[in-house]
Image (cartoon, rainbow, N blue to C red; front, side, top):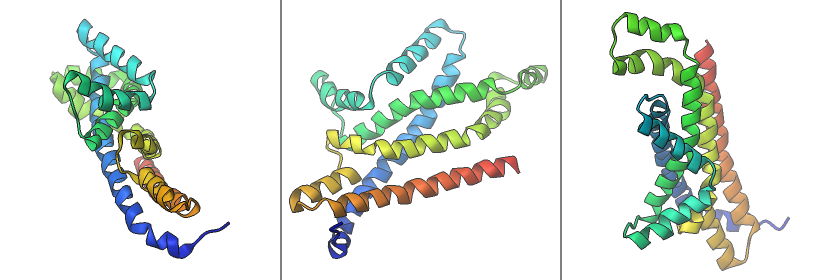
Length: 216
């Protein structure tokens, strides 16, 4: 393979700038997805009909439409009705909304896994709803979700090349621009792949470590 190590080193600053943008968008999007997923999971257990229906409608829409289509709508369609968002904000919101729907289902399964006796004990102790969720249910539901959250975080990193369609200068876009200007493709795309591995592998190992700690 024709691989120029000197050229690969020379393009590292540009790729690192793209990696920083990727990291920023993914971390903020992940935080949004985790919080939104929790809200949606709780809403699905609501006895208020409209709340339950809206949450189910949200999950159905975002789980059954492609992320790229959702990004296009946020970035190109919303300005038609007077709502314009910066590209990076659109990426954060797009990833958060999309993955929030999937994380909500993971929350739902984990919450349903909390033994019924825990709910009954909280009721017997006359704990209010907020305290029951905060002190009894969520601590037990979050522990088995650690590996699932880790998988979704890695998945978000792998989805970031889609952000190039809304002009976000993330890692893939940086590699693509270098390749387009220099007509050298091996170096930028190889280094890009190595950078993704440098993020994904430690992230996977970290969540595996947390999972093991949970069982210790």
